[in-house]
Amino acid sequence: MRILVVGGGGREHALAWALHRDGPHSLAVCPGNPGTADIAVNVPGDPFQAALDTGSDLVVVGPEAPLAAGLGDRLRAAGIPCFGPGADCARLESSKWFAKEIMTAAGVPTARGELFRDRESAMDFMAGAPAEWVVKADGLAGGKGVVLPASMEEARRAVDSLLAGASGAVVVEERLTGPEVSVMAVCSGDRAVILPPSRDHKRIGEGNTGPNTGGMGAVCPPPGTGRDFSREALDTVFLPVLRELKSRGMDYRGALYAGMMLTPDGPRVLEFNVRFGDPEAQAVLPVIRGGLADLFMSAALGGGLSEPEAEPGASAVVILASRGYPGPCGTGMPITGLDRVRDVLLFHAGTSIRDGVLVTSGGRVMGITALGENLDRALELCYRAAETVHFDGMTYRRDIGRSL
Image 1 (cartoon, rainbow, N blue to C red):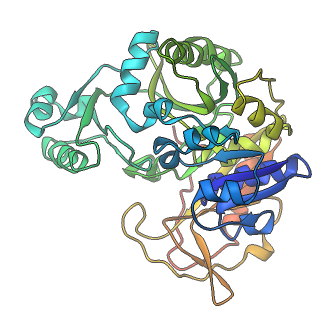
Image 2: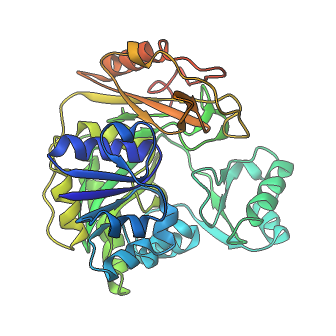
């Protein structure tokens, strides 16, 4: 099968790796990165044109922005199967308020909230109690559009900043408490199969301190979730949402991510993403025992789905980031030690080649993924590898899997 993966980060490297392991497929990645170049052909430029130029039998879209812009619709109109929803379904991520409306109509448990287009109304709604609320960008924000204000001044800055985004709106939601769980499903119309759940670590600092990032690490499965959790998520979240979309004439084909919180009153959905999470994909995809290409193709064609098998044990991913992330950070730092790393997978995110040398090119530079018979062993392998890799300003959390 000729497969094109769209994107150039750690999630797309993990997708390309999983599909490469899956069988003798002809793989291309647009635009890709130095890691994907080892297992696929990197293709620069427009992904739609890349799909035509490579004669792709299947396109797997990694990031959310191309989906929100209608890449899935264009590909399907050209007769190319796409694993990724159309722009109508992509509104589950591109508009937090649309997602909230869908959840309400579908009876999916979530936090109460309101949409605001001006600062005064949003501030009045919080009624001087910022610690009871979460401020979210209504539109796409690269995983960093969520602020948990500790003061009214911080809330005001968050509202002003997020209102300046493309959508010009913010959602203010009730702040829930409890451990978070990431659940990803492969969806085909009103059918879905759940992949092993995971847990992301969003905050930059240990002990879950500091600003939110795109994710500093993940573990799979997350401690504290029982055997029936995936079935409950399927029955109470994914299937109701897919049926609601279908009732509105929307046909969802692709990955759907639900960020959930295990509150004292039961699981609640915090957000939807219309693609695999990152770094969660780097922890989850390696534990799937193959068959992903066929599964993605069946979903892209709107066909039936088979439950994927997972390896026993656990996996973990630790993100190596540049100093200053999630804010401005330096680039061009040489990366060394990769040739001495053993027993782990290295998924490139923010790397590039300069004068023949691998260097940093972004905030999240690389994900170290390990599998083990249990979570302790997987984390041991990750951190052993992290001590071997080096670049100036390298930082990573040392409590992945230990902090809720």
